[in-house]
Structures are given as structure tokens and as C-alpha cells.
Length: 621
Picture 1 (tube, one colour):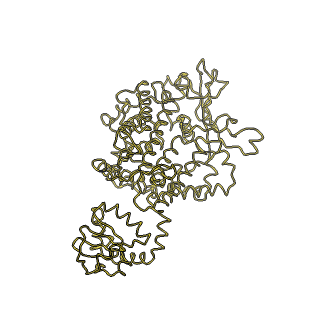
Picture 2: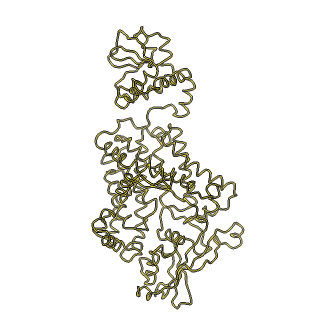
């Protein structure tokens, strides 16, 4: 079964010894990898130096194969020598067991070894192509530093963006007051409400406290950007943003909100456990924590790509999705308008590129370093293209921050022309144990989320469904999938007010389409959450969006916190007596139409969304 030489050497080494071909570039590169993995448990020597010490081993054998010499003098060669050398440490013992006990493992391994040994020049070529000159396990001290600081910047954007509009959204006089929401939850659910809605706003939901949470989040974000107390900062940021997300109801129900929470939570198990990050003296990191974040990146992108195909939307299958996307997305940019003018072949190519990158590239998250770097470049290029044509707040920045984890220290040091950090041992102690616990709990849920993207009709096993239910309130394991079904029309709601019921004046939003000559503009990474929700409301009815009726009531009362969310309030002094909502179908203009009229949009009236209301209607209810 095994290729063990029934041979012993008289001068056994004091420590297990690997003898390799010192003139072989392929051998030298991988010996460096093994040297790191065995952590001093094994010595290594080229046969050009060691052959004289062990005359019992024929020189031609030493030239042809790797040899491993135990402390008792026993000699092994070939694949078994490789496995036994790695088996000197705990993580490699499974290979030795498989070699000795798993049927077929030994002959297949030895055959593969002989093929590689006879074609070492070719193997060396592919090693350089896939790994470069460095095949040791990559380190991620620099990318960890960039990722953690970038995450702090994204948290800062999220908190400040929400802070600017929180009074009008969920304040005491806002559209959906957080206090009323929590009070209703407590009345309906009793003590369970505190677990199902984990938020600090149970203690206080006043406007002052909401501002305190946003301000505290912004300050802690700056501390994280500065590298101060990263783990403590990440913990506080998670708690504060989760609190605001729960209190924010529909206005904080976007995929990037839960993505930020999941990323921030998993970052706890990757960030350095020190009071200050120091690139000159990096702390060890948990590779399990890194795996969790890479798994999140894989899940985010793979699910986003697969659901487009499993939704059976023909526009994704026939590559016509971009015939609609640029002008039907929530808040297009002027580049989105320009991209809509592209020829059909280029739009189809862009759809194909998107699908390939989202479905195929994520598998290279764990590929050899050069393939991993190429995949990261493609993923980042896709995110930049999405950000250029549409306003997706901080989503693209967050996806790019996760992609930074695919760049190892060797590449970053070369690009930034900095000194490469010294290799330090992996983390020990409680952090890897906690990361492993999180992996064990979340892996089956993540697996089902990914599987449900492929088979959306398949029911979850009851134990996994129950486990997902327990962790769901904390937003730490989530499913993703943007634009599962492409929207193929663009209904827009125009809100109008009137003092007499005859003359109607429109309320202009800051960012969503309204006046036809207003160009699409950039607003990202800020998210005008009311403008975004108006897009969703237009796809349904006002009965499906009760917050919309509350919005109209606030306009009838001219509530300052709410009217500040608009670009123009046509009734600045006296509130309107009536408000109504009309529905229009919007579409980008063509180059010819834009040159002739200066308009960026064209529209057709599509009837009534909500009939005229007055305060008397609300008072009766």
C-alpha cells in the first residue's frame, strides 16, 4: 500500500528531517510553506548537503523524490514523506491517517506525486502563475488594518447620513415614531418584545436619545478609523446601529443596513485585540475570523448572482436586464442616463459580465493568491460600475471593503511601497474559540441561505429554521440578493397639496425624480431614506405602505421635521387643507429628446395613487 522504504539510517537525526532537492525551484518554494506549517518540529536540508550524512539512501533516489527521516532512523519517500512531515503537527495528522487507513488514498497520492515529480518544471511554472514566488500562507495584517479603518469610515457615513434625517423619519413628530412602534410591540408581544426587538431605545426613544445614539456612533466610528480600541469600538458600533435599525422600522430595512451589522459583528473576530492598532507591531489574527468574513463576501455576491437566474426573470436569461435597470432603479445618476443610451450589444455584454462576476468570481475567494487578486479586481470593478450608475448609499463601499481582505500583505506592501509586516503566530486563546463557536452556529444557516438562492422553493430543515429564528433579531446571519426580478416600469408618486381643492402644488423631493428637467444626481454614500421608500411605495399601493398615509398627515400639519425632508414645501407658512398623490410612469429621454427639450425624463399620467385627504379624514379615524 505505502511507498515506505524498508530502510533505516545509522545516524538518525536528533529531530525529524526532510531532505529535498535544493536545485529545484518548485521544491524550495513549497519547502518554505512546509517549514512554516511544521513550526520548528521538523528540520529541512537539501540532499546536496545531506547525502553524505546518509549513505544508506541512494543518491539517485534523493534526486527523484522527497525523503523524510524519523528520529529512529526510519526513512519514507514520496507522498508519504510529505504527509508524515506535515503530521508532526496536529493539523497534519489527518493526512497520515488517511494515507494509512483510507482505501485508495495512498496509491492515488503516490501516483499524483510521481506525475508532479517528473514534471517539476511545469509544476514550477504553474506555481509561479498561481502563487508567484511566495507560496507560504499569506498574511493579512495590512489588509486587516485597511479593512477595519474602512469599516469605521462606513459606520461614520451611515450614522451621519441617518442623523441628518432621523427626526423626520422616526422622531417623536416623525413619519413612524420609534416610541409608538416599541409601545405597540410591547402591547402585542409582552416580554418577548424585548428579545424580538433588541434596541437601546427601550430605555429612551426621545428625539434627544436618538440624536445621542447617532452622535455616539459617529464619535466611536472616528475612534475606529484612528485604530483606537478596535474590538471595543466595533462592539459599541454594532449595539448602537442595531438599536437604530430596530427603531427605524421600514426606513432601516435595506440590505446594506443588515450587511453592515453582519460585517461589523464578524469583524469582532478578526480585529486586533489591542488598545491601538499598530502596523509596525501587528497583533496576531484569527484565520477563522478571516474565513467568516470571506464567507460573507462569497454569500453576498454568489446569492446576488444566482437569485437573478433562479427567479426565472427572462430579462436576466436573455441579457436584456439593463434595457430596464438604468432608468427603473431607485435613484439613478447622470452616468446611469448616459449608460442607458449605450447600444444593445454593450448592454448585453454588461449583463453577462455582471452575472459571471457575481456567480463565478466568488469561488476564487479561497483560490491561490494571484487568482484571488484577479477575482478581487473584478469584484471591485463591478462595484464601481454599479456605484457610478446608481446611488446605493454605502453598499458599494462596504462590498469593496470586504474585497480588501482578498489582498494579502505582499501585494499591499508592493502597491503602497511599505515594509512588509513580519510574520507572527496565529492568534491563541479565547478569540479563535469564539470565532469557531460563531462558525459552528452560523455555518448551517449560511449554507441554507446559499442553497435557498439555488433552490428557492426548498423548505429549510426545522432545526436550522429554529436556529435562524433565534439569531434573526440580531441581524448577524442574513440572506442577500439585489434585483432578483428586474423592475420593468417606473411608476413615480407625485404628492400635491392644495388650499382650496382646485389648485394643486407639488412637493419636490431632494433626490427622487420629479420635475422632468431635473437631472439625475449623485447623493451616495448618503441615503435619503424617504426618497428610497417612495420608490418601493410606487410599486405597490398605499394600503401596503401605511407609513405613506402617516407622511401625508404630517404634511397636512406642516410638521417641520418632515417637511425638511423635502427640497421644496409649497406651503411654508400655512399648511395645505388637502393633500393627494398622483401616479405617473417615468422614462429616461433619448439623446435626441434631451437635446431638443433639455429634459432628462418623460412621463405619462397613470391615475390616482391616493385620493385627496384632509385632517378631518384623519380625525374621523
